[in-house]
Image 1 (cartoon, one colour):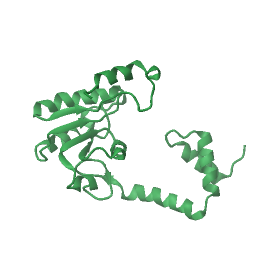
Image 2 (cartoon, rainbow, N blue to C red):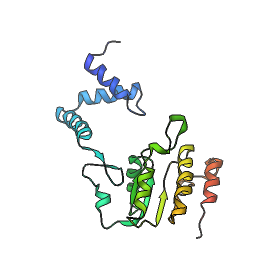
Image 3 (cartoon, helix red, strand yellow):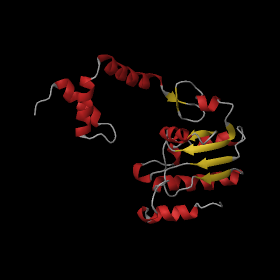
Image 4 (spheres, helix red, strand yellow):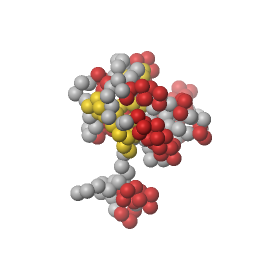
Length: 198
């Protein structure tokens, strides 16, 4: 099947994005082809700006345009609470809840021997260096509930607890609106472990 060169190039590039298969890439490419020129130009400019202007915050290692980031500069936030996440996208996920008013620390990954990621490749040393100067009393470990996230959480708990800081972990459980009979055993077990007084 013949597809014009620039269109084929765009489809190939879109397929490189996570969760985008050939059909979705083609739909997106055809959509962009039919979109107004200004919309396509705005998308291209946004991608270029992203690569040119976004960098890591020197304090929390989240993504920012200004250093330090707006969260680190916000004096209304509780500086004694630090939420530790694996990736900068996790900060975005937690901020969407509008429930956490502390600060963050992005590790830059999770411990994964299979991928060659050890503690030395994560921002653990920088995390420890923040505890005393920032008077941090609680560290919430908000890593993914998978093997890498759990091993990273256990490592951090063992490392940080002796430093006199309260280390907590996100609770896991049942989604709102879910049915018990559809939940898997691990999720139900986590929900039971994370139960609280009513």
